[in-house]
Amino acid sequence: ALSIYGPAWSPDGNLIVCPIRSWTNGFKVSLIAIDVNNGREKLLSDQPWFTILQIAWLDDMSGLIISARDQATAPDRLWRISYPDAVSQQLTSDLADYRGVSIAGRDIVTVRNDWTWDLIVTDSTKDSAHPSTIASGVGVPYGVTWAGNNRIVFSAMAQDTLNIARINSD
Image (cartoon, rainbow, N blue to C red; front, side, top):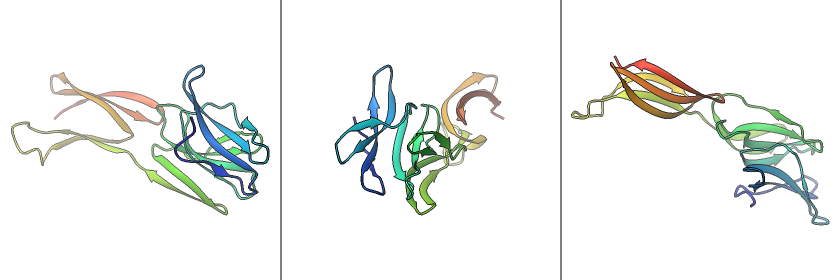
């Protein structure tokens, strides 16, 4: 199945590159190139991706910039894929998601989304408009539970790691 984010036409107009999803030997997304002159399709890279959102060619055709996730727990990052040898280089490494990519000359435009969260406690019998903030962080929160003795256990992603933490509620 092809991506909903669409293809990227090469600057010379001879190639279309797009992500393609496959369930062969587990789920993965790959980059394929289609030669518009003869219709031949070829795998651009052996690297498996979890998602590839958008692709943009560099003007000199030396590579592509993609918004992609290399594993399920990673944020969407910007990557440079050299062409034609398809060597990938990670361009962003923070906890933000980078969604979409477009290139003008050497300038990349993208949407950066920071994931921040607050762990809050509020009284269920009172107005919850004024909760107490116990902790704050950056990343993707996953779960929270009371652990007894005024302790809270919660989990959140930081970089590519799922962390489990315990904190006192007071």
